[in-house]
Image (tube, rainbow, N blue to C red):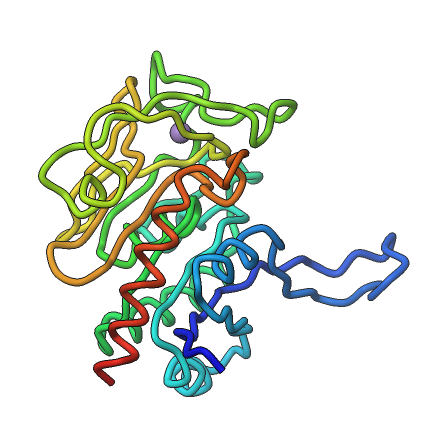
Amino acid sequence: MESRANIAVSLSTEEPDDGRELFKGKWLQYCEQEILHALAEAGGQPVLLPDLRDEELIVRGLELCDGLLLTGGSDVSPMVYGEEPLREVWRGDHARDLYELALVHEALREGLPVLGVCRGCQLLNVAFGGTLFQDIAAQVEGSLCHRDAVRYDAMRHEIEISEPSALARILGSGKREVNSVHHQAIKDLGKGLRAVAFASDGMIEAVEAEEGFILGIQWHPEWLPGARGLDEVFEAFVASCQSRAARA
Ligand code: MN
């Protein structure tokens, strides 16, 4: 069998819902499908690592893997960067934050490549000590629309990728169009990260670390149409995980 890098994928959680027919009243952990297919098509072997409320099992789980993908989903809780939620609906998923922060810190300790998509980009920034806008529209005057409930993943805007950067080596520098399905964004950059892509309103759309493959992107390449446009990010990430697997 061909060798493939094992890529740890973080999961979303859904609260118990008595109105649900299946798994009524139960907590769920799940992952959206496109991102798993995109990883597999890029040559990776996705490995879903659940939140078991146990750091030791996070370490054990990551030992099986050559890289970490932080997926999108619910809001990051302001509590993890020292703020109170400005509105109750922006309280985020604190339990998920703690699980994913443990994953990131362990991955960084082990020198594993890390890719954060959307929420994952924001979480990565928080893991490096940064903060977020709890809601772009409420907190940034004159901001672009970054999430539209109706257009959802068809919502697009331009970004500008700065040079020199690892992202520019993957996608090229200059302007690209991306989708935008987020209402939170990076406010203060984490220490050790740099912003490498911006929307025209100044919102940070991508961050990376100086060393290793540590990249956060605010858009969802897996939801872009055509040959999954901008999938070069997944390919570069998987390639980095593969070379890490070959070294280990
Ligand atoms: Mn955006």
